[in-house]
Image 1 (cartoon, rainbow, N blue to C red):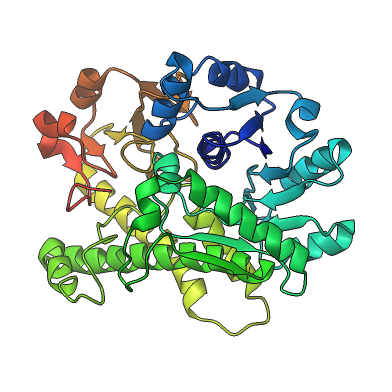
Image 2: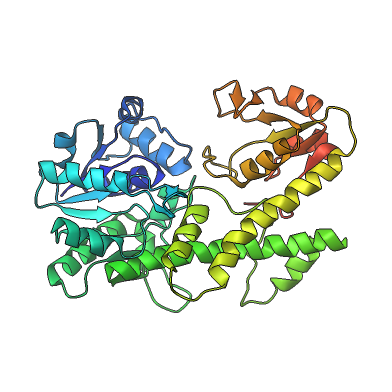
Length: 414
């Protein structure tokens, strides 16, 4: 089967490589440098499994039928499925995801291929697919949400927690196409996953085919729940800090309850990254004219946490003359090179608004400054110059400057 993928970010590239184990896959991108890198077997993003797959293709140890291209005709003509994995950033002016890249990709696909099944993998508002099918008069568009972590995207495709696809419930042909796409993803997973026993006693990868609007809601509600959990433990940590209590011990005790569980409970400077901030805001926007209290509070809690963290840092600066606050890494979490919407940037802005000089250590950033703050790749000099070092996530390379470090990474894990 020939499959096209529009976009080679962490979603598109991981899906393309997964499917290229058993299918002919052409991944289209508009950036020549990325296409050239991929065809040389080099990953443009930090992801261990993506790097392993590309290296394996290059040396012949992993026979993948994968090609990156700039040519829409090469990618889309003759494709059975075309997966759209282009970015949909949240537009605060419109209070809505910017879906223009999705619509442009669909137009380009249809220009080359009028019959391919288009699978939207980009995160979109609730109801978007149904509206788009109606607006375009195109019944061959379905939706499949992704549940991937940046830095572990291909791993999460190889070992998926679940696979979901959405098609109109009254359209048998579209439902069959959605089921077939779910099968393609499952076939690309590690073979052992097909035999695994789940917590509920079922065997294999949990799969769900439902309506497109329900599938869109599953994605946004899942990410907003994760944002809620981050916000909850951050507010617990804020309370403990304000009262001089051990947040670590409180969290350990709370999480002994098996209904809560000892996971996703490590305090941070706020939830960030590419998905949780924008997805929770989009879900809140979808609640227009629907009663709610909790979703709005989740969004608001993230700003409150950053305010508290910034105040804690400023208290440590105290009355020092011309202090320098060092920002250790802009990235959201360990093992990733992506710092889009990272929470530490929000903290950094608040500190700078108070007139504090900020020095950034970010080895992946090839620029002399970041929004007017000096960037250095010299870690030793960074540790010497900074009066306070702010680290959303701890790293052992900070050990010799531990007395300067401010972090809420209590358990030293993402």
